[in-house]
Length: 253
Ligand code: FPP
Image (cartoon, rainbow, N blue to C red; front, side, top):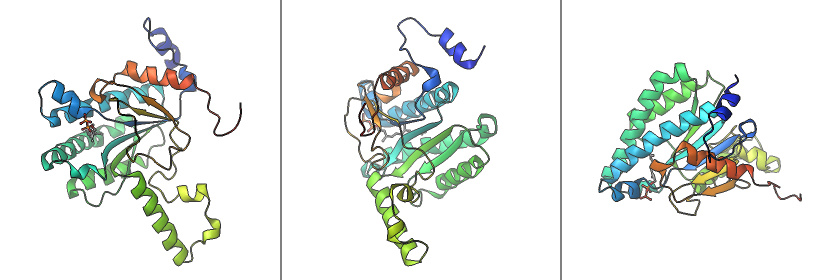
């Protein structure tokens, strides 16, 4: 039995109806609501982030199982440094823990990993782990997980503009060559197709500086469920909703 048939056969009653043969190529998620999840339970915010990191593992594994090609998650924004030091350290600690595990399981999972964001202000151990996982990833060409870390959409566009201007000054290119495709080469997401679907749990309905350039024609899915509670079934609901839409990219039906 093929894996797709197997998934269909395991489908529970009332489970959202997803066509696994026509999944979006790229899903991006704003993992929001960790703090509120913890508050509801009388726990410190770091416990919410720990639950969020655990859920990221579950959802990323499931995305791989169902055959999603690209998953991008917002783990830490350029603005998140404003949070209390204790919370920032907790998130960085969770990322380190995850990457240490990833390094030891990459050979088995063969998941390609990439980081979008400026890694230079990170502590050297975390930065080293990011670089190592990216380096190992070069051997793989399957499912790709992109982690946005110290990432901001505006920052990414500014960096792209500066890098393009530098390339012009160095006579490697000239302004006349600049089009949307060329500019994409100067972004962190170079080589990655634009997201088809952007999911934001937790009831907030905004983009928060996430993938500003790349989201031009993305479909959005918002839900009140907090990220640590965003289950596989919630993901299926988002995918089914996505599949019910008509994407016209500015054209007519
Ligand atoms: C937003 O929720 C969440 C973050 C800013 C951090 C996300 C980080 C993780 C899930 C952990 C590490 C990630 C990986 C990939 C291992 P919030 O704190 O703003 O929640 P709130 O709006 O309820 O306060």
